[in-house]
Image 1 (cartoon, rainbow, N blue to C red):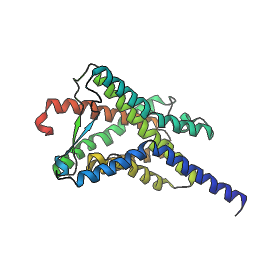
Image 2 (image 1 turned 180 degrees about the vertical axis):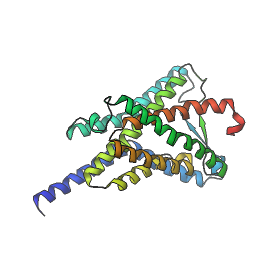
Image 3 (image 1 turned 180 degrees about the horizontal axis):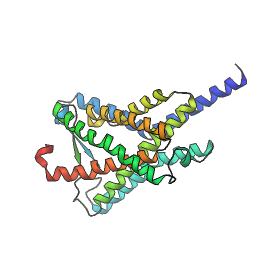
Image 4 (image 1 turned 90 degrees about the vertical axis):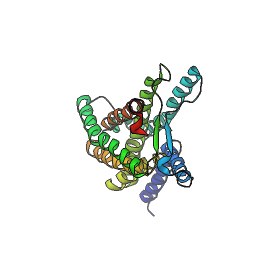
Amino acid sequence: MTRAAEWGRLRRRRLWTELGIVLGVSLGASAVYSVVNLIGRLTADTPLGEQTATINGALSDRSWLDLTYQLLAIFFALMPVVLAFYLLAISGGNPFRRLGFDARKPVSDLGRGLLLVLVIGVPGIALYFVGRALGFTVNVVPAPLDTYWWTTPVLILSALRAALQEELIVVGYLFTRLRQIGWGKWRIIIAAAVLRGSYHLYQGIGPFFGNVVMGIVFGWCYWRWGRTMPLVIAHWIIDIASFVGYAWAVSAFPSLFG
């Protein structure tokens, strides 16, 4: 083996190790827990369609302590994003510009983000109801909006946390490292999309496929645009609608949501 080939093999091994660490402390771990959660749901006596999954639930029955826990959870959930950016930075170049997560193209990023909301958000809502009707999606129970004065702002922050964590790690960072390892376009896009679907399995089979489709669309757009900013914008808006808009809809039309 030549010196260059040996160096390339060692570099790929280092990148795989790095990927394993970043995903192991972030969404890779979430995917494993979601798979186990789904197995538990499928083997339970209650049918999948009659089960529930709570998102953004209370972490304490005391207001100040719940707020503290919620903010700490958001803060520490973003540490893997910081880790990914740090690793990209020490490997060379500006990671913000490298992933297209900057303010160089605000108008274009906003327009593309809103387009993605229309392409992904609206069909995603329809897919949820189809999954509920067919019995392979659990009933997602959002946090009530009137629990505390700070509930809605924290839900918006939680939506931003999800957008940053998923788009910057599963798209920006993962795509960058897999390209350096030598993977091709569609292999990367499909792998990232399956990962995205996997950590949503706790919601049932329907959300898995819905998020795989979302991952394919987002991955293709990132490959074409070279920017994560539109993806973060779109994801943030979609999750605000899911966390806040959905909670409002449940309270306004309880019979519709079962």
